[in-house]
Amino acid sequence: FEVDQRGQQDQHDDHREVLDNEPADRDTAVMRLEQTARLERVLPAGYVPTIAGSAFLAQPPERSGKAVFLGAVGAPVSAAACWQLADWVLALADTHPGSPLVLILDAEAHAATVEDERVLLSDYLVHFSLCVAALAKGAPRTVLWLPGAASGASYVAFAAPVDHVSALP
Image 1 (tube, rainbow, N blue to C red):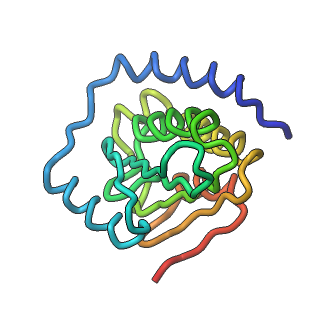
Image 2 (cartoon, rainbow, N blue to C red):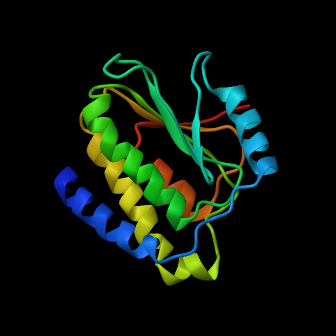
Image 3 (cartoon, one colour):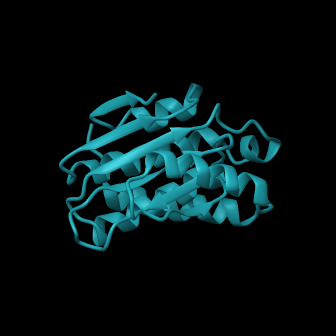
C-alpha cells in the first residue's frame, strides 16, 4: 500500500471545492478559550497554536527539525476540520521536512451533522489520514497523543498512520 503525496494533493483540491459550497462553521469565543486552555496543558512552552474550528496547528520555526503539533480539540471532528488539518499537513512537507509530527486528538466523536454527511465526512477523515501517512514517510517519528476523549472514526483516522499512540493523564 503506497501513499502518494501528489495524489493526496489532487484529492485535497477536490475536497476543498465541495466544502466551498457548504456554510462556514461558527467559532464561539467560549469554545476558543476552552481549546486554548486544553492546548496549553499539552503543548511545550513556546508553541502558540493557530486554531480553525476544532482544528489546530502549533509549529516551531521552519526547518528547525523540532516537532510539529496538530490535531482537533474541543468539538466533534468535522469535514471542514479534516480538510484544514490535511491542508496544514500537505504544507508541512515543504516547511518542516523531517520534523517529528505529534497529532493530538481530544474530541468525543466525529461530527454527525447533515452538512458533514452530505459531503461524506468519511472521505475527509480518510483523506486526512492518508495525508499524514504520506508525510510520515519522511518524518523520524509520528505519534498520537490523547489528552482527553477520542472515539469512533476520528480516532481511527488519527491513529492509523502513526507509530505510537499515548493516552495522556
